Image (cartoon, rainbow, N blue to C red):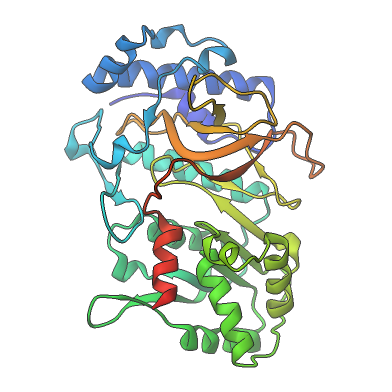
Length: 375
């Protein structure tokens, strides 16, 4: 049985949005033990490390983390990279999209436990864990229809942080196998939730939620008023709203007006199936880097790290997955580390996503959602 004591420790860190010297040291050691393991168990990673003259045992400092060769997220759409025997996989997911290549993401049991622990610590610190039953409306794919689609698993997974009274998934397949957005049914559920006076949790891809807000307006559906401890968590891209020139601040205002959920309790999330670590906005609507993650902004030509405040290609490090060598992932997203300290109270660095790199669009969940909305 493989042992990763530092990965176990850092993925279960209490208050992961607050960094300290011990947590930073544990993260570096976790990266070291995971890099050594993958180098010894994945011929592809051993070849990659050898090509760059990288010895994983040399990871000692924060600066050493910059030298870990990253796997390109696009390569993962074409190649299945594993470091454990395939029979060790207990969960197999795929990335979003309606066409083209999809990334496979596999987990052994302990790696899955670690990624769940990361989410537990994050939600606990943000006040999202509650023992009081809640009603859920999920503007995303119904897991019963979605199969192994990663984003559907993620949304279902988030139901465990408050007991489920009732739940409705608004995106379902019709008899022809096409995804259909059931706006009328979703409105029926929300109206009944409004009468029950339990906290409501709305999980949504912004494209679907924006479409639903417009539907409510067209139906002259009056504003609702959900009780305290109600939340809106979005994630998956802002293409539909941005195409209609609606800012994120305006979007939050629309949600507050229709659902009675203040902007402080509306949080956007960022993530990718290939990486799995959670990122959500703080109450000031800034993304923070939890202590079990590092984000490096790279110059796309020189691959050098760019200074804080400047845009770069986003590389993500998280030492949780032994099943697949995803310790360091080079994304197709542009972002920047924010140079000023956030006034939300967390001391972790903050960042923002600036958009997709390249001249062609990857078929990600935001684009897929926009296609469904247009039907």
